[in-house]
Length: 393
Image (tube, rainbow, N blue to C red):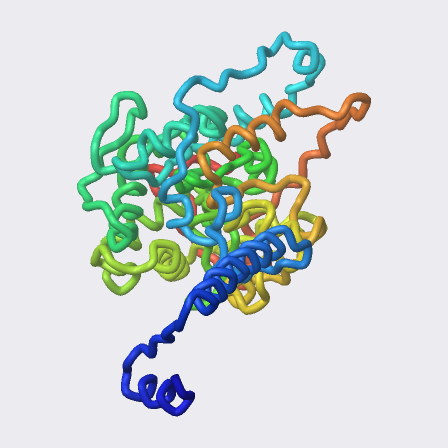
């Protein structure tokens, strides 16, 4: 076939065929086919084992230990059996001094409520209960259905991302009505958040639950004083909860009334309007304590692209590498159920032999006057007037 004929057929959408003439031509075609297959196989092997092979982000799916978004954990699951725990009389734990931790357990009472849903009761929430949740003074799982194993609360709300704000309001109303006198501070966390509760108590020790303040990973858009990331968890003083429920939720000029809206942003807007201070949760070295991602994202330089939304949202300057995170870090988000147990082991069981750490001195208490001055918010005379609030300790 002439080249002109091949070109004409290709231009007209036809497939040109090459005719062979005689045994020699057929033998040539078979040899050519064999050679082509062998060459293709060799090149495929070469590319597969090449040390210089590079991947784009689209070449692989994120692992459960490296999530960027909630849906990355949609198929994550935890162990079906009991992982177990180390007994207090084990060699290592027998020499631990828990005096200060036990002191703060009694002096800084924390009620933890965990945002969950029926589909996540056994996939995620139960693993919170088996790990860090047991260190709260009280823990509640806020859902839309009761679960005897989880002892979840069935709130009168529908599930789904568009109802998180409604669920948050109902959860705080439930705590206010049934459990407010049992705690000094109320922590909200997701069912994929891991919290080091002892470090939370240490941070909160210098504040009073009668002070109108809340803490978390502070973001800067949308709210003048900043607001706290929902995924990293946030903790409200008892007085902040009282103001939110009594003054904020019923007033449409202060709190959004419908179910929609970003839960953390809407809470931040509402709390600002009832004069609750968005506190600074960083340690004395300026390092963060609440984190919206797993440790890897914050510890490894360059892991999170500088164009990623996090860098535009974070309120304070945030570094990468070991300088990112406080030695008294409190929370990490997007933690898979399996990773809950990994963190549990690394934080509470693994010990380098011969290194004995004494607890840091407890910080000086901060008065309400100092708090208001630092936050540049107007003082109010009714901070301790509610019948639900307790005297400053």
